[in-house]
Amino acid sequence: MSLPKAELHLHIEGTLEPELAFALAARNGVTLPYADTEELREAYRFDDLQSFLNLYYELMAVLRTEADFADLADAYLARAAAQGVRHAEIFFDPQAHIVRGVPMGTVVEGLWRALGRSEETHGVSTRLIMCFLRDESAESAMETLEAAKPHLDRITGIGLDSAEVGHPPVKFRAVYEAAAALGLRRVAHAGEEGPPAYITEALDILGVERVDHGLRCMEDPELVERLVRERVPLTLCPLSNVRLRAVDVLTEHPLPAMMDAGLLCTVNSDDPAYFGGYAGDNFDAVREALGLDQERLRELARNSFEASFLDDDEDRRTRYLAEVEAYEFD
Ligand code: ADE
Ligand code: ZN
Image (tube, rainbow, N blue to C red; front, side):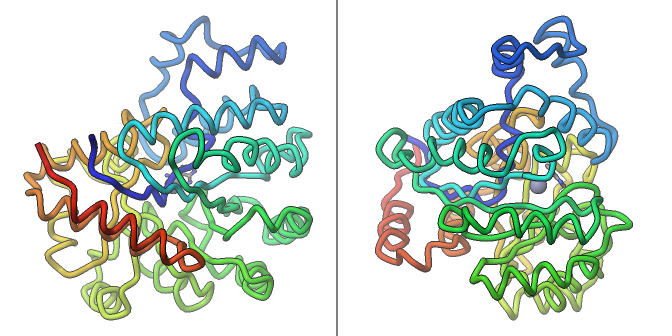
């Protein structure tokens, strides 16, 4: 058995494994510019966020029908469950599909086919978070929110992702205000490649409740103090940080220093098909590379449930937290 945990930073499109990509390509008559899964895996060498995003968006061409999105989510949930994930708050990127002629309804209802039965099939509770692409316009984000309105019973919150530098949070002030008025929870990627000031903006202007990544807060001691004081959760993704070169090597990851500083850290997988591991793999990697002891790992697991959007189901949160406390490491 694995340590029970919640996954709070997971792009469903980033769970597309090469085998499934080729299977969906065949099903949909899409030709990928790679001979086979081996050649595709060769392309998984990234210099930075943009070099990853190029491949990430390219492979989305195979996702066309509700069944495709359902199969993608089912495959993720099965893998996550096997690594101790009990609750998953899942990002999706509707603009990347709508631009290819795949409507919002196909994406959301397809994902929901898997998510809606996930407790029975995988023993994993779920939430769905719709992300806006920050390198697209603010108008496009607002149109996307509009397109999501018939599906809001499926969507818990909004997020902000894609190329960070040059696309500060303030650009999305209006759409975050509109989403808040609709009762949606708010998160945003900030401080992955972008400066600490983007984290402050995400808090002050977008009103986010969690910061995705937030790694670069460590460059600004006053910001760290604030994040500690306000207990703002950070959804860290250690294997992603190494693959996208936000940190040089895992042994130099600031996670232990961040926990020592009192930050509310969680460990997540981001885009596991691309970065070498799912949630449990990230936990294993930081345990080994950073020498985290059992109580530190338990703290990360506890944090993940405390930072989750389970406010509408506190009994469940309490049960999950009890599972964390009862867990016996081998
Ligand atoms: N989209 C998918 N993964 C992402 C990441 N790590 N940062 C920004 N946008 C993303
Ligand atoms: Zn991410």
